[in-house]
Length: 404
Figure 1 (cartoon, one colour):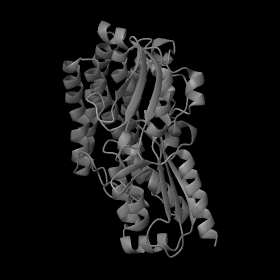
Figure 2 (cartoon, one colour):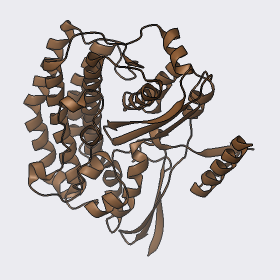
Figure 3 (tube, one colour):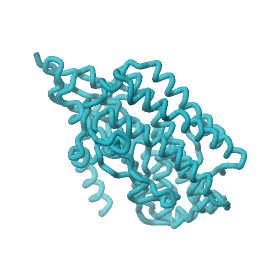
Figure 4 (cartoon, rainbow, N blue to C red):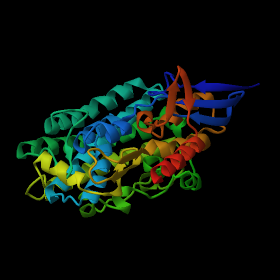
């Protein structure tokens, strides 16, 4: 018997609204379709029409609660390039440390979700308990656990003080001591292995063809990482190498199990980067211009376009920014979150598996739907989805209007 199972747009197996429609024959998945854009928050509109560029840094944090540093990081890099704003070396190191804090807490959050999707809730609670260590450090250094308000054009808003360093080193030791245990729980448990090995395979060829990013691509053997390929902040000093599962297991399968391997190895890598950054962090200023009105005046006089790229926990995050002289806001601001690139992977991952595999395979790309949704129109209480062709036609129309 053939039928269609809709997973979403609101479903207990999904943390955010998105619709995965699976065609089923018996228990076998025979086709997959994904419909995104179940909600739209208009954040880019706010950045282009209501806020000044400094206010927009903090609205960018609200694109995603987990990647709340990655999005403003992309934005500031783009604006700094256009406005030719210099960044002190110490600030670049602090940006690296903050980025790796974000990767640790995001990957551990994901590991807990993955355990939950497999029905292993004691492991969910354990993983989220140890995640609290990095959350405590985020609160200590930033004053906030989630949205941190640390980024600023030309540097960062808060230093890592001497009294913070022993606590951060204590966190490093805590994770070093625990990583073997966590790896054993996730990678040697018979049930987890049965539910994830050879399940949700994304081949290297498909990962390249579908332009997957982040751990989703690296677990398929694609050695790409923005920190390695086009280093930014102080990353050139850290010689970051893209993590692939064969570094631990000796082989790359590209399945859900390999995506666990990559994220656990990346937690270890983040711990090492933070330790090296603490050891080698230079002294000096943390911001090149402290006076906000002066900074805004410089940005307002600037004109041009640039892209900021950052290796977020889920993969390459991109913000396109255009500034026009005299404008109080960003003239153009477009966000391409990593989940946008990874969603296409769901189809090859899910094909020919069973209904019961859908939650863990969907979760294995660590989707962030709030980052991804962009275009839906509600008018006269009727919803209309904008297709790629609609958006293309709207873009042409706007270009023609601007050229009049």
